[in-house]
Structures are given as C-alpha cells and as structure tokens.
Image 1 (cartoon, one colour):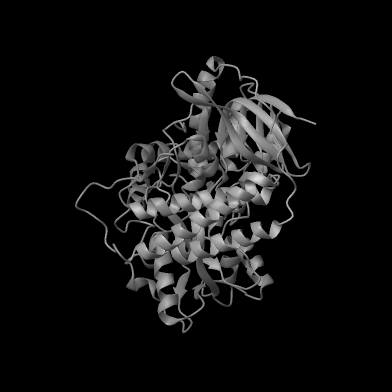
Image 2 (image 1 turned 90 degrees about the vertical axis):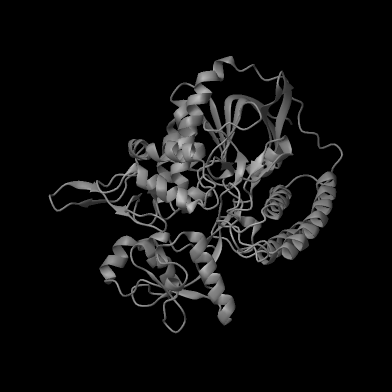
Length: 531
C-alpha cells in the first residue's frame, strides 16, 4: 500500500524552531505537517535547562548582548545577524508567554513582579529568562499543546525522513517534499509540499559522550548536503564543560546557570583551577572552560573534576536547581552537601546548513532553522542561551518569507513512490550497531576537544571505510531508523573533519596542537563546503 499526501509546508523537526514556525504559519491558514523522528518531546528543546537570553534588565543593553556574543564567537559571527537576533529577544519572549510559557518571576524591592534573570558564562549581565532549571520542557510542552489544538497543523510522531525530494527549476533546484519512514508501520511514505523547512537540531551524537538526546544525529545537515546545500563551520562543535559523571547517568547536563549562580569548579583535593586559565574563571565562555577541564583531567590522570554549589544555602539551591537536585539525588549525590562530578561532553553544533537572514538555503523553497542551520549568529563558539533565541527569531523570519511568497510557489509535480523492489530485510543488524559505536569512538578520540593533523587524517581514513560499508548495506536492505541515523552521522563526521582540516589555526571551539594560536595575520574566514 502506498501513501502520499501534499501540504503547503512540511516541517522536519518538532522542537522549539519547528513548532514555532508551524504555529506562526498555521495562524495564517497555511496547511502544515510537522514530522518528529521520535515522540514530540524527544528533541533537544525539551531537555534545555538554562534558558533564553534577552535584554530585560534596566542595567543591561542590546549593545552589551551584541558585544558578548561577538566576543564569544571569536571573530566569525556575522554582526548583522547578531544584531538582528538580539534585538528580537524581548519580542520572542513575549510571544512565548502568549503561547502559555510560564517563566520564573521575582518581586523587586518596590513590589513589582518581573522576570527573574540568570547569568551564564560569557554574559556580562543577568539576561537569561528561564523556568527554574527546566526552561526547554516548559517551552516544548506549551508549543506542543498549542500545535495539537490547531486545525491547520498535522503532527506525525515516529516519522524519520529518508531523503529530500528535489526537482530542477528555472534557476537551479527546488525542494518538493520528502520520502519519510513511518517507523511504527515500517512503511516509506511520500510527503510533498510547496515549501520544506529543516528544524532537526544538531549532530552531537556523532561523539561517544554527549549531553544531547538520542535524536541529535545530524539528520537535517546530511539530508541537506545530499540534496545539494552548502554547509558551513562544521569544525565548531561545542563541548559543554559540565556533564554529570556517573556510570549510570547518561547525557545529563549540569546547567551553565550553576556556575552563573556561583558554582565553583574544583579538583578532587578541593582546589580551584579556572582562575589559572581565564580571569573570568567559571564565567568564561564554554570553549575555554571545557578545554581547561580536559587539560586538568589528562594532566592529572583523573576521571573527572567537580562543580561545587554546596556552600550556598540549601534553600537557594533547591529553589534554583530543582531538576538537577532531584536527578543527582537519584545517584546518591546531594548537591546541597557535596560537589557534583562532571566531565565535558559534546553539546551543540555551531555550524550547519548555510542560510541567509530569512533562513533560506541555496535550494529554492528549502529553509533551515535552529541548530541545524549556520546563520552567522554563533561564529566559532555559541554563547550560552543564545540557541533557543535563534530558534524563535529565525522561525519568525522564515514565516515572514514563506507567507510572502507561498501563493506564487508552483504546485508540486507528481512524485513516484519509494521503490523497495530490489531490497530485502536485513539479517545483519550487528553491522549497524558495530559501525555506530566505531564512528562515535574515533570521533571522540581524534576529532574532539583537542585535535591534530595526524588525528584528523586517521579519522578521515576510518570515515571513508565506513561510508563504503554503509552505502553497500543501504543499497541492499530495507531502511530502518537506526540505518538512516548511521548513514547521516557518517556524512556529518566527514563534514566536521573536512572543515577541521581546512582551518590552519586554533579559534573558538576548534583547537589543534599543530596550529595552537589564532591566525591574526588575515581577516577571519568562515569555512564553507559545497557538495
């Protein structure tokens, strides 16, 4: 049995970026389909703890937020995109409040009720709007509720995109839909649309240790690359400095806000060390803190360092970090009384599919928003809590552009169904699991926080071997969700390595032993790859 359905807009991804775009379009009678690879709550937005950066405090300013972002980005941010994003901060927060998101508030000395603002690494002021330490969950659940209620939005859970469908047009190539695996029915559907938007999140699962959920396998980046999109700055993979270190705690992030509220990084003997690496100490940008922790772990041969907030009153800790407290307590760690064991872990993809200020890619009618995109906001290092802001701002920008041109977009031509006539069910699933583990292990070892030319060469050799093996497997067996993710991850790995090999300097998140200094002899250049 075949399945084919047409929409005005097909959105691939159900996090903050995808659902925001869906709601903004659907309110204008646009028929929208939203695809989620797993459950609607399985993406990175749901797990975001810290918050959303926006200027609300009277002592803060737009210019200060811009300066902080440019400083963190190490010379590679697009200043126009930074200004565009930052100036839309307050509007974006107010829109979320209209959708039902309840942010944490406080009472001022004069009795006024206002938003409580956290401070995080890289920020010179308190400007992180949050819902306790579970901001992403509050945002995600509110947007999902609104989307479920909307007559113009159709939600598809457990639908994994196999391939984008493109067709030539007058000036290049246009996207017309996607082939989509219904994971539960094990059926590939044909879903067409006049406009397609990628909102699939990042690719941190290409590494062995990551703070991200299982969904972060770089699907949108790989789909766009195979379709002919340019990608940029893939060498800048952000490692969050503080992931809970415990054998039974997988991927649990200890929020930046813990350091923002005074948490101290210490060695097993209780001594502090961040002051030796940066005058901002614990409030330095993430790349500096992550490298400092990595240095201390390797230098001393220890398993982890510790993040200590226990010197603060217990009531303060419980009020500000209830989720972290409850999670750590499950592992017999009482953060009101003892420090938290932490290690760095892959956290955020600063590069991605190259877009313009309206989230447009170089393929007509294909947009990319959120972590999947390289907008120019983050440069060589994303500043804390600018990510959800980027999702909201570029969902708004994309919606404006789509609404303006949708009526003039030509109807979708007839698309053939997915052809499975020459493949069979796999009898060697172990190949997928083995290749998955091998890929993530050598990416962690060779293309992690500290790199070298020799390590990158070794990684590329292994990627090329895996690509041949995966391509052969893909050509002979019916697609599964695990196979699709592995196929996408190996492309992402290649793109990270290729970008890293091109950058003959250390800048932001890219640190190489062969070129340990930043090259200031010429203007900073973004890395761009073309298929």
